[in-house]
Image (cartoon, rainbow, N blue to C red; front, side, top):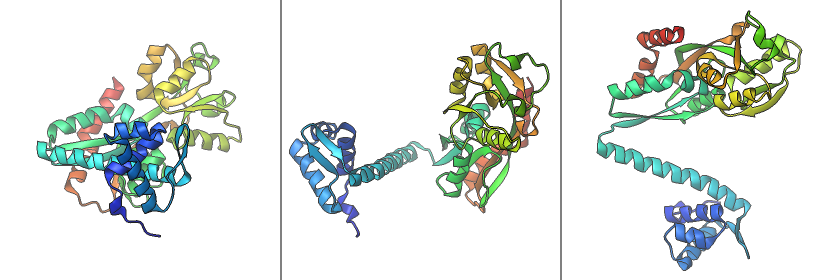
Length: 311
């Protein structure tokens, strides 16, 4: 069955999304600046065009049907795309030549990218870099699916179809509650020697979590993952509360560790020394995208990062 998409005007789509979010046609009509009768007619026309009811009507308001939930999900994506289109056209009128979408892992954003992107913006004020944060697996997948222009992630995910170059190195360390028995050690600690502990980690797809799970499996030991959170800061808060221990990038976590007065120890495992990659599509010919990639891997930029790390 095909649909007449021309009938799905943005006002009606926005109205349907508002109905799902508020559960009230009256509130959705008010938010959409429509009279109640006009709003009701638009919803009926949408349902007629789809051949499915979008909402169940009851005394307390509206409840999305299965078709309504699908419509709202894609409607939100369409509305966001149109808003982005409007913003980019407005930028063109203000002199911004183009937008480049950069998807990066938490490790790259927390340790390296902000000053580099600020500098790039100074050198290329006509280019606007839109940044999205994801776990490394999702970053690489987003680039393979052509949903971003440039990706920066920890080495490990599948890079087939990608042109990858070395971006930076970083180091993983063990983060411990203050006074923890392992904090008293003076030598680097092997990951396997900490597997009796309960662990705090990032969400699925994070390069660190995958490495921990693989290393525990290789040691024939269980990995006692107690909880998962979405940021380095949240990991440190959990560790500080005594809920477990964690592994985090050294440069990203040391300021937090010091502020929270918790402990850290270096890791002896070779995989604690990591490579971060910058990638674009294989055979990329866009001069703007290649300019950004070249800037990010420029030798002087890498030298500056190493100097900062040593200080």
